[in-house]
Length: 254
Ligand code: NAP
Image (cartoon, rainbow, N blue to C red; front, side, top):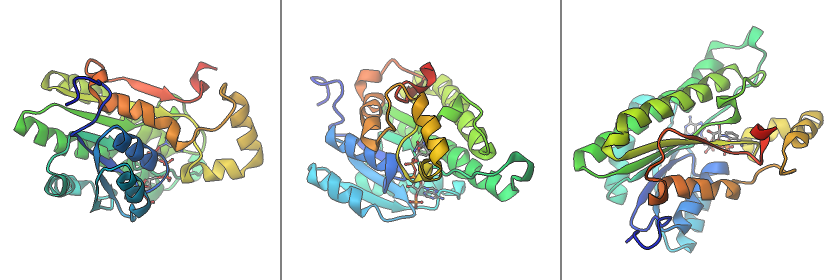
């Protein structure tokens, strides 16, 4: 089915966490455009995304989960397979950021970001890979990293730790699973207009400084991420393992 167009996701099912809003919504819609059905995993209704996916002639199934609870990974993947019949692609997109000076950073702000941004993505990848290996099918894992997988950031201790860790885990899993036909890669978004960056965008000076460094001279919109996600989910990227692909308007080139 996919032979004629290596970028086609026809017949595939993509499990996308946090597909109700922001980048996850953009990724789910782009994957549906490429022919995939979607399993949206999260704690908020994905009705808006479901409407857009249905308008493209694809299905969206919802699985409820609070992704701070990493021990639920097996249950989430089992429910996704029950609903959609299979899972070929995992997009670990859900994430949160906590901002405070390192001098007063709290343990709860540390744990929240490490759990949602790093621990749960690892165990979801493990649960999906176990299913793929069991049935002998190839698959794709895409982790949503960050510029703070490369840079230190400021006032984002737990976020920086989690996203740097996610880049490391992406490479480790690629090393272990490439020979099993499972591609593990990451996308590192630059600065996108979503809830995640509302604090930055409402700080006039920070917002101006950020924009001045982006060669593309604009913030990204969720649709800007879709092509990279479809590429890393498709047969076109079958020989790409362990890469962290920046989609950043040129930010890292400066
Ligand atoms: P967003 O609009 O705030 O979306 C975050 C998503 O994560 C939402 O769907 C949210 O669900 C979900 N989530 C957070 N905690 C959760 C939990 N405990 N259980 C279930 N779902 C949870 O922000 P975004 O920008 O689209 O972020 C998506 C990913 O991109 C994140 O990993 C973020 O770190 C990364 N990223 C974003 C940017 C950017 O510029 N925007 C840059 C680099 C990386 P709710 O709606 O229920 O809260």
